[in-house]
Length: 155
Image (cartoon, rainbow, N blue to C red; front, side):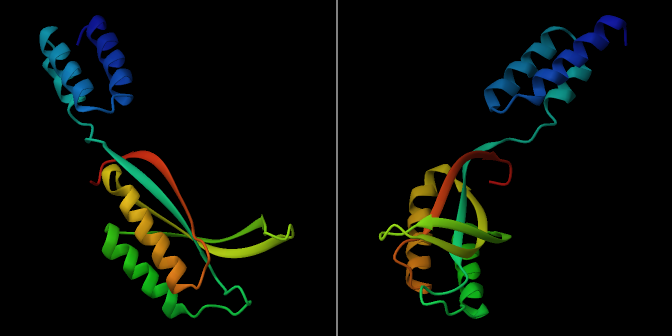
């Protein structure tokens, strides 16, 4: 490979690392074939397809509002529900949070934090189903579910 080819390859690799859509990869493919460098075609085609997804972070309290710890069976049922609904879930560990209740007092609460990723089009429905499950199974007035737009390769 000549010096000009090496410079072109580095530039293409830098561009392809930030290429997240099929259209971008297709543009790079066409560009590589036009400049007559077949080795550049392979570089542009090695990146996985990223799909629009949403990461849902879920907080599940470890004890009831009265202070009674929940048994492991409830958490196991919750985890099975989320796996059946979304295809998988990651337990991120126990976390501690503070919030101000309706009386103005600061509450300290321990929760298990989970994360799952779903196709963006399914996120509102899935988040609502998880919210309902947490409120019902863990006797909560509200559940804490956040969503963050992401790209993922596994969908």
